Length: 236
Image (cartoon, rainbow, N blue to C red):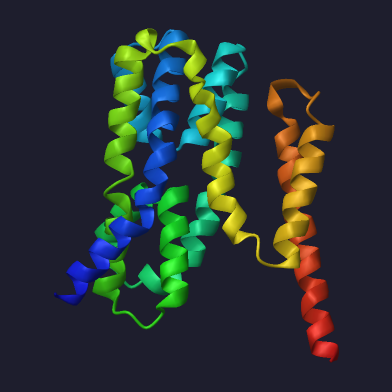
């Protein structure tokens, strides 16, 4: 089997488990957006253009609370700033690809595709660029089209889904499944712990703006712990 095809299929297999959470996640957004007053075209445009579940839910909630547009944009931007870190982490592996291809990969870069690609590139750093690109698009194949389809189904048929099905379980499970395997160092654990503590402590702030405080505190904590760790290693 050609190396690129093998890498592509490996990418499909790597991200296939995320389908379990992508379907209810997309359904839930379709239902929530429809209940918020968006029509089918607006719901689908939201998903296709933004393609970022967490930012979509946050923006939708703020719009329902009649928050100022500036707050909606700032919150969505803050949530999606992690994509800049994802891009920086994958640049050593995919940065040599042509510009148009990097643009397509940047559009498809979401939590699930990053999680699968980062593990693969860490385990097989010596793959060629075409193989790495093939693997990345393999991770995209089961996720992005299904996200669109689930969003459409939620918006189109959400009214007939019994409320006792509790689709909202998909949101926390999706992020726990992606972040838990990444908490491998003291810096990661410290940043995660501080973010949870600060998010709860500042939950009283309007328009969920306490998340900004939690994010800033978590990043500072993680960076400081990383510095301490490096200094201790250097001193040995």
